[in-house]
Image (cartoon, rainbow, N blue to C red; front, side):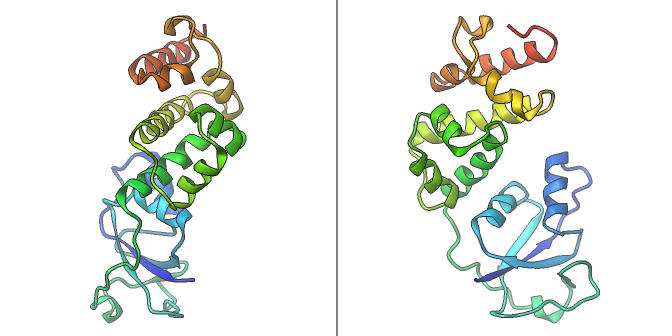
Length: 203
């Protein structure tokens, strides 16, 4: 499998907690680099911290020298002097869908449940997950809005409750479920309902 070298070029101290956790999960520290497999999961993580890192292809079979953290290399070494364009990058639309998939997926027990909420077949969801294709505009919007909603709910609801909330009728949404409201593009109203739930008005 191809390898990529990732260097954290900006401090993550003032970044949101989710981005700091992503940097930690990648094994990064400020002005340190790591060499990792070039796969969809890693690219999804990189998308959320793309403003804090630089990415380049790594030599085939290259092993980073030790002494600079777990799996890390010194970003000031001569090995980094020659910057090589990342081979076969995913288009931005596909990266966005991959990132939104992983954020939305936290609110569902399975891909089948998530696909049902999105109103698509699970094979299509799997293609977005892999970065094989980009969703249509309407599907991308629904996936993005669902990801935003799940992220909001994740701040105060247990993961196994999020799905129940999303498919339960809410009085503040006119008796619709949040999923139905999201399909109609009513993200602001869904977030208002989520805020009401957080403050005790679970209806």
